[in-house]
Length: 467
Ligand code: SF4
Image (cartoon, rainbow, N blue to C red; front, side):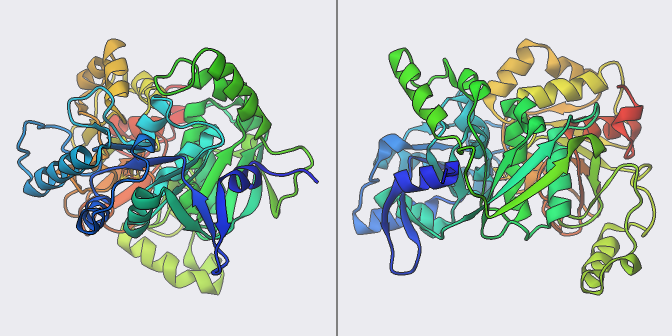
């Protein structure tokens, strides 16, 4: 019987089985940021423990870092304090830090792949749920809490529950105007926001095979929004080509050896899955969320559901979400007037996302009532985009062009919604208050759809705008 990639990588990193039924796993790469690490470092400091593997630990600043005014000290005292704490911790514990002003700084899930730190067959942990992003490279990558950040810093190990594997085959061809973001939103809508609990999602099928690594990252990024701790794609020639020449990837003979090993980790043809699901890519339309979790979405050409048409058990949550969002059951998402357009986050702020959004806004202008911002996922993305003149395209269209960070994905920094503003967002969470205002409202969609909405001042079907 063949094995899945998850089984192979899990076994290779198993230190021992714990009496709790969990597995003690060795962590190949630990990514650290300013928000979930201070308590963890504090424990090490007070106990006199070193970081076990500083050469497998890399830190950057992303969550709280301002994206506009970056002179130190930051105007935001909390941000200044958190970043100063991370600087001190990294210095004292010998952990490399990519700080504000460095070319390698950026959202932790954007810089890992960009720098070639993320590689097939690794176990990767980070104190952020969207660590699943790195699974696009055939890594087993998962978010951990602050106490586990402490465990990994101190021991390079973490206790994990065993996972089942659900293969999600995306068959057919993704139509024009439909993006990886739409595919994953459609998957989450179908399987539910808790459908993946206890599973790793293995994404496969022709549509996934055809996707770029950037697109696969978008898919894997949102696995956690479907309840799956881990999402991955088997490594292939595109994976190897992406990694070749990256600063932290192996080079020369070591690359050739690594490539052979990476290829051997892909799930075997006769691997057994705990569940198998097929999604038809050709049937998909651009997807927009109407509710307060990423599973509450519709295709742009469908009406918002009415609670009465849904199972009894779902009705209270749907009614509550509709009331919070101020949306009418049965109405269409097209035509909903937006206040803010945000292109950013670890889901959709890579160079390819910005190129596509720029293609849509080029020669147009943001609607007068819309505040629109583009926040590159990393300084590397920012530099590359500016080299291509994308910043000029966005600025000419009335967007603000910011420095790299999480920005309005979570509103832990000065980029926040105000009051009940409605935001078309390329991020990954539309929970109540997620974007910094307790009453702010988020519509998740692809960056292309955000760009089109920014120009129209309302939600539109990007396929009817410029394609
Ligand atoms: S962009 Fe959002 S989801 Fe991604 S790491 Fe930052 S806060 Fe987390």
